[in-house]
Length: 300
Ligand SMILES: [Zn+2]
Image (cartoon, rainbow, N blue to C red; front, side, top):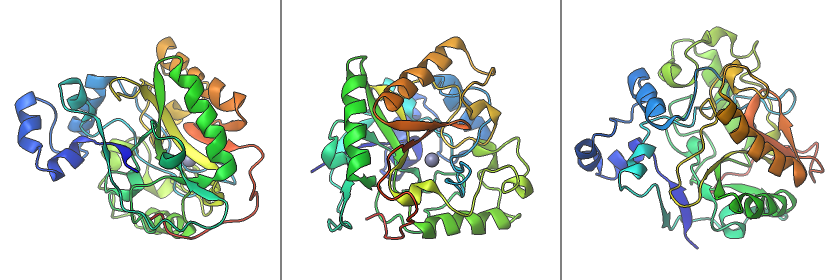
């Protein structure tokens, strides 16, 4: 079954569409530079100011790195979508197909959701494909996936679908984040994901943790996107942005951005997920089936 992958500028370039993008005047090279990030943001409104925090942590749960990258950016390519370039085409992604008992592929259960699995690409706060991500797929426990399906159905009534950035995350990926956090020389993605955070503080500030709730299989990072265009809603900060602006209750975003976060949050909470105060995109199923177990099988 094809999965609806949302592509960013970098991916398009990789696909040989760079010229087309250039012709459209849409951003550039995918590199995640500050200027491209701000263009992206400006163009799409995807994020607001700055700041954020990566997804990671959550005290106990999330940990590691969390970080991520902001969602919007990169070229935002997304903008390309607004200019006639499809933001998401169903594509076939080869998958191993034999998941541990009780786990499912989200796209098989929720075929009209969108997927942009950042850690399976080099557009994330680390700037490299993360260990354990062998395919751009989202895997969750069946319980969490069924609840998420209800969330998606509900949001469709408002003209949105879910856009998933990450779901189950192997512990080896979290270890990769930890290694990255300890290498002070590697700041290649700072402009896009943690412009206001000193890398030496990412552990202390909680952006990277040694364990992640994602490894338990019932935690997801996601946003909402226009069902017709695939363009993500403006949440006031990109996915995986390390900073206060990424937290619920921030005063640094507009009422409209707050309303978008609330739309997602209300639907998630209604169907059994709990929000994480520091990251608008991070949710965990309240009654998760493996509250103490951390898995390490690859995403493939
Ligand atoms: Zn998360």
